[in-house]
Length: 326
Image (cartoon, rainbow, N blue to C red):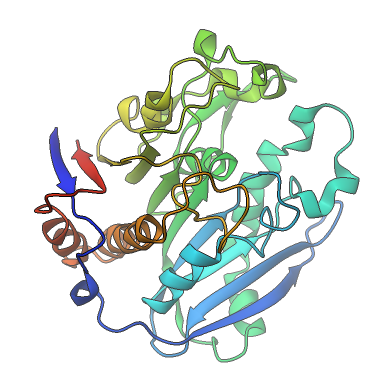
């Protein structure tokens, strides 16, 4: 295991990518899914130029805002990734506040934990349809180079697709939703282990999370945690809880710990959003750079973007965070 400091905002890793491209963003792309109560809608963002573009599936979190938990959220990350060579696909999960009329029954049911992962599988099944639907995108996507990213509840979704398992609280059966078409992932402010540590006042609302098992999460992943992200409403473990997907999962895994970062990680859910308690454009910019570099190297083995990014971000006297690997 190795730890490295992460350089401050004065450092740029632009050389790892070159100049950002103009971004084309198209929404909604509408997919009809049998048995789903409403159509699956997604936003697709891509660079205006380039071919053989890898794909990032981005799963939104929950949060109090009405529209960030949908295809309209996470613009700071989606725009950066698209400008640096990725096609970013953002579905609106059934748990979105924009679909609150579907949220009947228990709070756990309203989170649609299984449906969220299934949304991503439906998207992968129909990448050709999506590519044909978006103007100027046809023939430019690389369907074999796919990564997944998620924030908060979206990280729970991404973790399941990367191989984490749980026991369905309704039927007691182990659930395995690993998606082999996904080659790497990024977990942002992810929920940690369940069991007795899930003891906060909101824990009863997430019974599916009480049996999360990261020991089966074998796909390579970058776990991002804020050292001020103390989710007392779920657990008294403190910020270390959000590092569990790194600590408890098998290698290869990488942990990026951001200093002074809360659950919003500087404001990744949207530009100038009210619920971001740790507003930091510099932190968001660094996170965009590092996650893009990580996924680029994972999806293009031999690419030096991640090595370049890490080397550029390890010599600052005022680090934004640190990187650990195993």
